[in-house]
Image 1 (cartoon, rainbow, N blue to C red):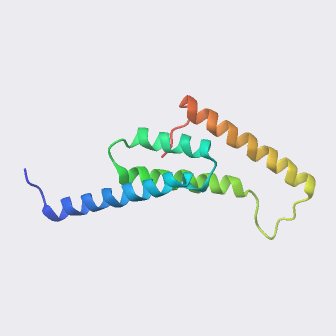
Image 2 (image 1 turned 120 degrees about the horizontal axis):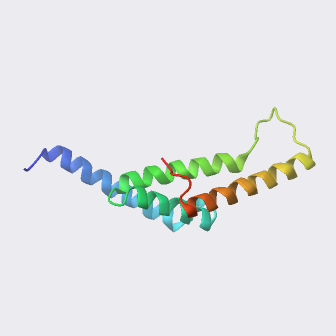
Length: 111
């Protein structure tokens, strides 16, 4: 079956764009620590082995989640003392390490 040539061209373009985006993210670890990126990337590749467009989408979602957790309370309406900032830093580190461990053991599915 030949299918719709326009749809085929669209799908091929989406895959090329997805591959390019994944390659660009790989080149800089998505702007996150290498071990976090390796876990996120591995999960996205496992979940979408033959679909670069979905791998790119999955990675974007993972990186956005990582950034949100890393930011913590950033509102100008929140006054955080040095002691509270230290506690927040420890909680972020704990959450990050728990996330990495859970990803490695396959306890959390992305997507």
